Amino acid sequence: MFKFAKQLSKMKFIEAHNTDFRNEIIALYLESFSGGASKQYIDLEELNQYVDGFFSGGNVLIAIENNQLIGTLLYCPLKMDNLFPEMIQKNFNIEKCAYIAEIMVAEISRGQGIGTQLLQFFFETVDRKYFDDVFIRVWDKNTLALNLYKKTGFNSISSIHQTKRNPDKKGTFVMQKIYLHRKIV
Ligand SMILES: CC(C)(COP(=O)(O)OP(=O)(O)OC[C@H]1O[C@@H](n2cnc3c(N)ncnc32)[C@H](O)[C@@H]1OP(=O)(O)O)[C@@H](O)C(=O)NCCC(=O)NCCS
Image (cartoon, rainbow, N blue to C red):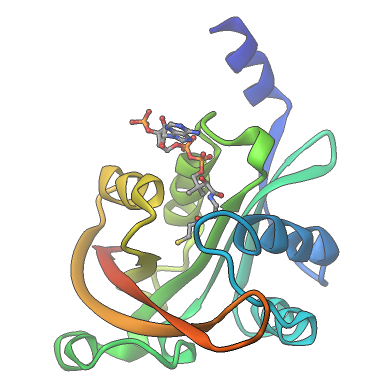
């Protein structure tokens, strides 16, 4: 209990600007998604552009401890996600929807509440002038993340099939992804 409180006291949640921690975010992405059950081929150039897109057209929230990145939450307007299902288009004002594209915590720091606090920090800081609703897309087998989102007040509303490249670049595989929604206002 004491150890946990001590750790939290050194931790800061901030919004990153000017590509601060960009390389650390890329490393965290590779650590999170190039291994484990969701192993897939990741093109480094595409990943660099993808992360840069949040600095230029979205928002980058980070958790740091002793000036080291330990977690991040990347979000942008939902219209920047080119996969969202038609039912969202029909039922929500897309212009006022945000999309949490990534939430990642360094492997050694997981299970200490950082993912939960990144989501809380999102709801504390998101600009309510621009956004009424927020969506997250998650792999249906990622039960840890799914539980985290449900516990934070998100509800599943739709799903899609997403094609990914095999780690050896030969062929593809399909993942079922769930879209979850929570009201911001
Ligand atoms: C999903 C992820 C962001 C969660 O971050 P986190 O900091 O570990 O989350 P929290 O510590 O806030 O934990 C959330 C819940 O999961 C549980 N949990 C977290 N890590 C756990 C672990 N290793 N074993 C068992 N339970 C765990 C926590 O107990 C907590 O539940 P509780 O509040 O009911 O106790 C993190 O696991 C991660 O970065 N995963 C890889 C990237 C990823 O899959 N991102 C989501 C893509 S949509």
